[in-house]
Image 1 (cartoon, rainbow, N blue to C red):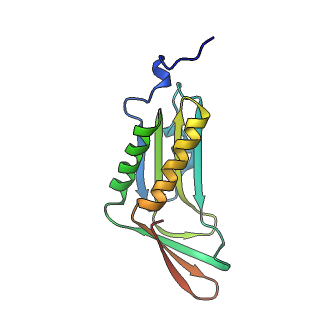
Image 2: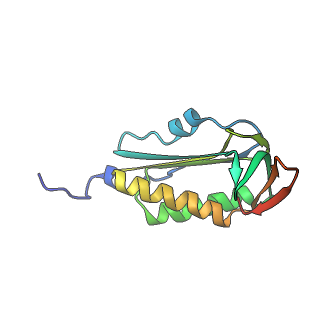
Image 3: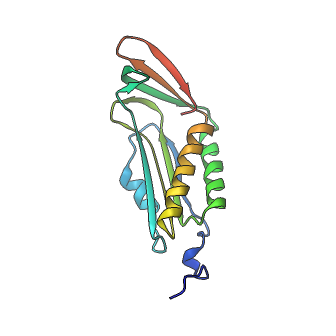
Amino acid sequence: MAVTNDHPGEQAAQDPIKLIAIRETALSLDEVFRAVGDDAAGGTALFVGTVRNHDGGADVDALGYSCHPSAEAEMRRIAEKVVAEYPVRALAAVHRVGDLGVGDLAVVVAVSCPHRGEAFEACRKLIDDLKHEVPIWKHQRFSDGAEEWVGAC
């Protein structure tokens, strides 16, 4: 059977951006995964960013995220760019702000597309661009009492 892109399921969905949010509460993998569910998607890629216990050779005890008021709008702008570049059936991105501990979820993004390769590529583009372009800053607190601000994301 020949593969064509004539079927509507092979194309981007009409309104694929399902969830964009910045939250002060714990993030849910299930919520993000459900948001990108689509019967025409053959591939769903999910990325989860967690607070690790070290950075640059130093032990991290905790950190806090803060953001500019435009951060959620910037997340949407980046999501729209990803949707324009890939055949996205559904997309979701949520980022946490406030104080987080080691192991907490900081960011969860997911993309579903007709095929797995497209889903992987679109998800990577989404998280990479969010990390580099959204005005979110990280305040790390180290075990030795030192502190460090890292931006964006």
